[in-house]
Image (cartoon, rainbow, N blue to C red; front, side):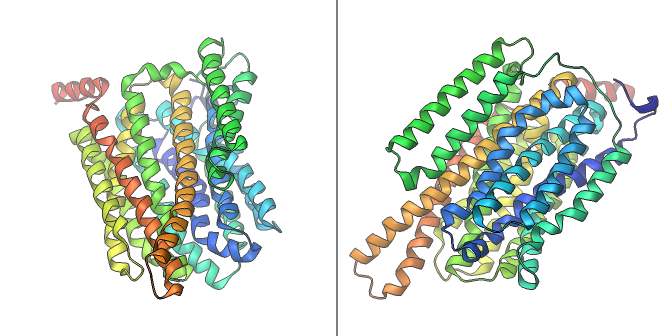
Length: 486
């Protein structure tokens, strides 16, 4: 490994730089949830259109995450991390000066492309230059950063919207971005483990086409019709390009992504668990703010305040998960986390129009504690058996899958919300509901209940997978050595 001036690496400043850079990146996801209803009114647009400020962002994150492995090796992960933070900050400025919904969506997609590089790059840096015995703590703090941003984001966004215009949600990213850029410049050393021969341009093109077409079809399938020519053409074409991408990566001399890391059963299982967790987690970040603001007519600030304790709890628990991981291993944490996430989601499928905020808050806390017990163990358990020289590719694959499935979840849940709401409204009208003014709110609430129930069923799929995640062989050997030394 080549390091700047051969100096000894100090891990604490590196972890702080990674923490802050990741925090700024995820903050761009969490603040937009609150502002979606405001943007609907500001631009006089439908939810299905404005939702693309989040869906497009997530799509770009998932699409561009695969380039991390190549560019990190080609230019060093420090320079890639720095470039991504600079691009994210510039894109925030462009979002702030947007004058209509399509322009804002375009700049959000640009912002998402840079943010998509930040998280896998941060993970690669941790697993390449942080000593193995400190990696669980480092991943816990990294996960805490990705949890703290959602904790602060909704409340912060609500406060900003109450006192300023929506544009300030993007302007405030600029000073945060500059601080993160400075910390990366000062604290993270320059290094390179290996240099790829050339860019796999065919792999890059096929993964962009496959990811984007499939997700566009999923998000627009409800409005176009799932059996329409456009939907089927995009889905079919996307699947064809996905197969071409996989074939290319398995046969190319210098692949964009080393898909062979998926031969590690532990990594593949934990990646599946992370995807399942992501799908269920996004159900809460999407549905609860929409329910509070569209059904109960709660202000954006009050919505953020309702969600704040649950998100803070997730951030706090995540910071201590690393120590628990070192003591009991990943399996127990994953099983308990899955049970809590499912157990917190099911009661949220019983919402009514006049449900109390205390009820929502309690079960959101249960959900988020479950998430905090799953994210770090699944992330670390999958990565700790991957060789350092392949960690950049592994983190790219893991984050690519998480972001693609996150975009899929948002598209799926938004589509179900729309279709089920119309279905329930018709049923209520046919059933003789006397107060016609109550039908929209009741139908919308019932559709939210339906989606939460689906999210509960999805997360339960992680339970059997978690059983097979045992303590790492490398971790067991390290523990035995420590025991002998003591």
